[in-house]
Length: 307
Image (cartoon, rainbow, N blue to C red; front, side):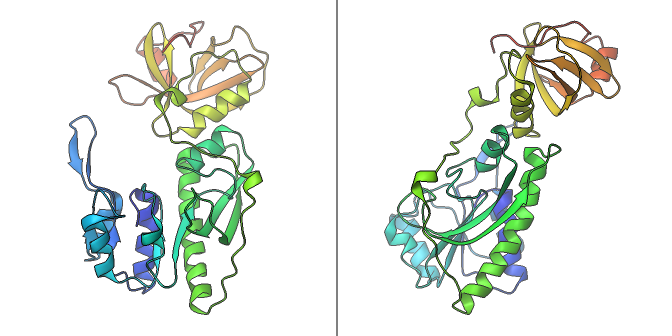
């Protein structure tokens, strides 16, 4: 059971490793992009490529969705970013249980957006947790956990891909342990739990650079490459990508201190950041140097304002 690209990697690994996938559940297809064309989910595409049965019920806990699930007669259910809460009648159905692959070091960052929130909060490490699903949100006992370091070069895109690789390795290791009855479950400490709520539009807005430069830096990379953080330049929306922290003394918060072929230096409250790529509404991503040549930005201009 899964929906986005992150989950598709795990489905592919299950099939390639020889596991008998009796059915695949994914959220219903939705319109995407400027043309609002309905596109299949990444998990659906992967399943169809392998000739697997795909089910996309609006509800999996009852009605046709649950009947589909019963027909699959699963010994085990694996969920990866499925996007729907499962009721006990579902996660208790398979005799070996239902397990979730979650992209954080639980009990930290329970919820819908663990990778983005981990970066946004400036964490130094993260990982993959495989746990047995219970009635809570990402609160079940842990079967396996793997850690990786987060570096300053990581963005949502790079960390997503690294965690997908780690998740696949962890899943295959977990299945071998399960097959030989070597899984030891460890209860989570609920008092240490933190949460990673889904991304809202306001989360991606920088309306002021009068903040610590690392806070600005972390927000930019948490939403790079998608959806991109938004600020304003002369009242026009501008997305920022590929940020890094630079040495130097700040000037007025939000001021573009310089524009070079390496990016534009922007002043924050206590320091400077370099932004190597930008995107104006309706235009492709470009370097600030290209934008300067097209008279779209200039040294001395101020970023920020009400979005």
